[in-house]
Length: 312
Image (cartoon, rainbow, N blue to C red; front, side, top):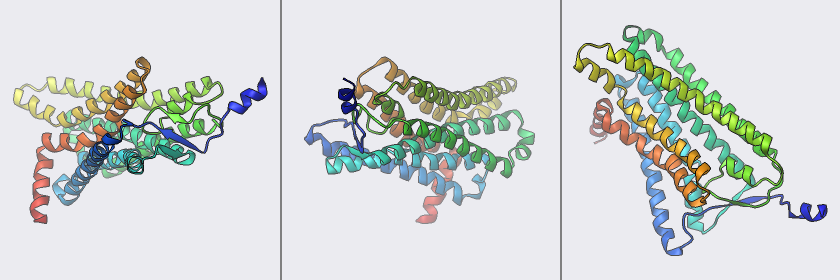
């Protein structure tokens, strides 16, 4: 009996990712859709980076963090969509074991980086609204660089913690991943042995890396709201709040879809529903961020127009 069980354990060299549709007639449409979304995301975020870099009036802490967020978004979507596009084009579902772990590591790295940078940007808005006279002194170039480095370091630790847990799983009961990318939770579900301890550690690390940024954002905006309510004029309150509008929209989009993914995976056991929720989190959110900042931010609009006129 023991020998029979051991024979069913699989030491895999590759995994099979899920497709959104197995209909051959829909493959060109899906290919064009994801290629378009990827190009829009990359070009939109690159446009923000170029606009900020070419305009000296935007060389401020807020736009410095925005450039880093745009770069993280480009890297975030590049960990999943290019592989999916190649698989659609080659009519393949395979991803090698090493490639799967690499994709998972970079996905967690840049996903966590997004959350950390949004927290740093919330702190920047807190200082700008609550301590406007000391803003330049507090948000010095050295502190801004340190905050970005700290965000990268925390994200790297989170990514490697998940990677070390995944490396402990040697044998798998199946090679089919119920998502279009290598999801760490899916890999744990495929493990042959009891992964209770690994599950606890992984969710604990994920909770810490998620709760800390959310707590920082809530605290910053708690202080911001109370400071804005003390402003006597309605025009002054509107002006102070308008500086946070784009950032609040991105936060709601990012964490709203992220929470939706986890709640959806807990409530729904349909792989298709989980994949669609993951799509919102990993693809749609990075694509919409440039539109939110360009449509709601007059400085970015002016910078993009100046960049366009300079190129023309």
